[in-house]
Length: 102
Image (cartoon, rainbow, N blue to C red; front, side):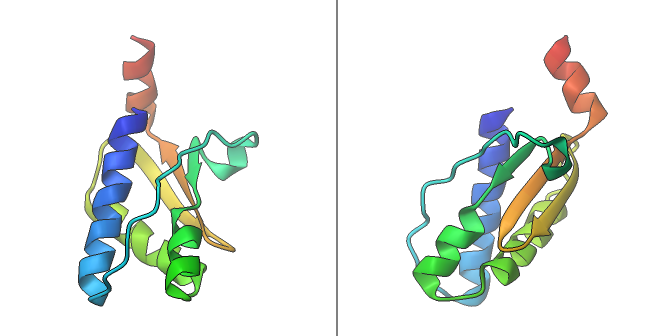
């Protein structure tokens, strides 16, 4: 599951890069399991890394990446949200959790 989520986020970053006409190197993508469930099943700070590199607002970048991820309509993701200062929280669908358990 971790690799599938990373691919989805990477795809969103590439779309963001193309959409803004920016030529930035894509930072290493890290997915973490937050200790508090209110921050999702997985979380990434990729938008903060891009924001630092591009000297742009990381929250705005996170919001744009969330839109790109949502546009992919992945059945594994129930909800994705941008949270200040620039985190992206991902919540897995019940079907996804059931598939992991099986």
